[in-house]
Length: 384
Image 1: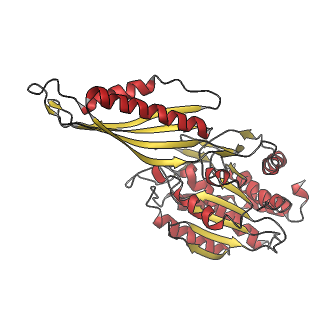
Image 2: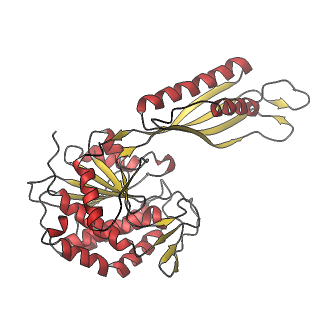
Image 3: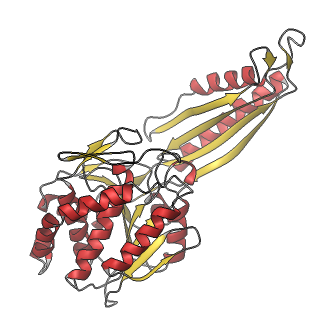
């Protein structure tokens, strides 16, 4: 049992005592706005806190990630723990946290302020108790995880450290969850253009909006496999000038996803054929601009890292729920580096203005991270 580790019980007990301070940290992180591509203010706070809790070699890299390290003795695997800084909410969103008993309410309080705060306190307790480490533990607060950020921050971290790290634990999602399969995605901006004209005088001329509508309708009729799960969505449409103008331009944002890279490629090809057919039939011009490319990847359910997560969950009285998702973990998984994503608390209404979390489960979330660090010291180093 991991709890038999000399410092494990002490760390778990400290996690219980740390709740008030951890809650204050969650609030502090959440109330610093951090829209994707605009995480600098939150990154500055995290950089200062990493230094204050005792991490070494704290730095910000070229894309804005904040990275700190605890050195091991070099006899065991190196572990990367990551939590993304950014939120889905645009600048100007009120991110004031509203405490309500055992609940904190605010946009981004769960995704991913609670994970960033928990990562900082896990580092603090490991330093405080001078926990002996066989390998290095690297902590990274990453940029660009949400939306069109395209996992930019994690890409940079893993690319820089790929020859060092043996395992990755990303903090995101719900407590008790475990993501070992990365959902891949391809995201596009589809722009349809034509000459346009007056709705009466030029009637019959091709309309960018009409063509876009036909493309969307044909995409909606595509049949895709349920195993491996493959999906499509047109999430945003825009265009046109006025009610009595034949639209000269219209655009849509398209999200294609699958657990299998081959199915994702086939779906993209089918969408492209629909677009090209509309060009030929209507005489419009259409372009597809790639906005995001999230790779697929997975490790077996029996992988030692998955077994470690389940062991830790059992010892903390948690039921492990394994499900696929698109997280920072996609990047290491796609590069053959074992990775899982786990959550640190419970809550709801993610990506909504009325998002909330429960604070009491944070103690188990923090204990989980600490026990995963301890347990990872016994994992084999990755073959390179």
